[in-house]
Length: 289
Image (tube, rainbow, N blue to C red; front, side, top):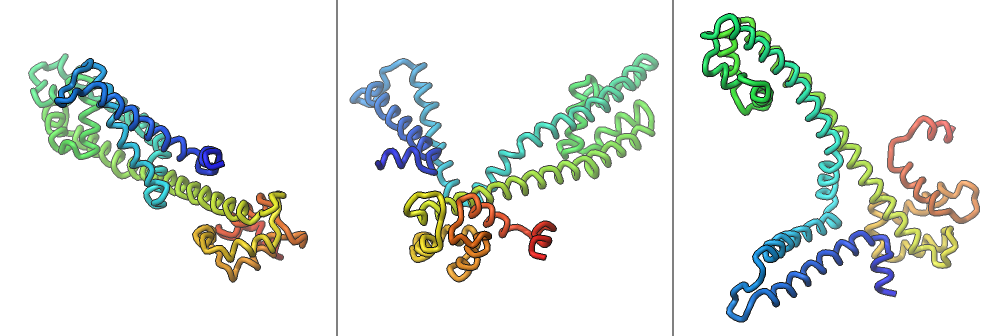
């Protein structure tokens, strides 16, 4: 019963994760006993020992376990993870813009060199001598890796003073327009991820309350069963998660029991708690009226 509940319960993902970490630790200890003699010297295959050292680094994954207990840290980690898709499209957009401008600058330098090879100074060829170097220079100018005044001077001296205006327009577009839009996309993605994580936490808490209150396991929760969960002090954390207390529980139950049957299903309970947590929508106001 204990093992089945451990691996088939609501926290089964963490159970398998803990088992994986413990198995790696046992494997590490066993291989260490066989590969290290009594004097402490290693007497095994060096290639195999390197694999063992890599497996030891995997023990750091145990730190992931604390995400279950620190809500703020879990929210930040999930927000970063869910932003990876936006990051990929952002990198692609930046590369596209810098590629277009880089091609334009390299073409200007090539035309200038064909007319007057003496105009191709060392600084100009260093920053914009080829397309990959030009793209990297444009990226450094946008992110602060290089002072963009150092990039405009060879362009202004060797090609035309107008290039300073062109480069200034590029910096204004990249920093003031594109980066602000990208920041907005990342913020929206992080807020959406935090909202989804909070909803998952609420659903988990509601299911906990429902499963503990449904004594006869018939799939519905009566008021007598729900009131019994209020008397258990261990359930206070779950009630705090969904934002209700014992005084509000009776009103919530009556609100969810729309047909006055004296019982509610788990789906009614979950959907009702999620709707009560957010702002009132037009359909909610129309229903009340």
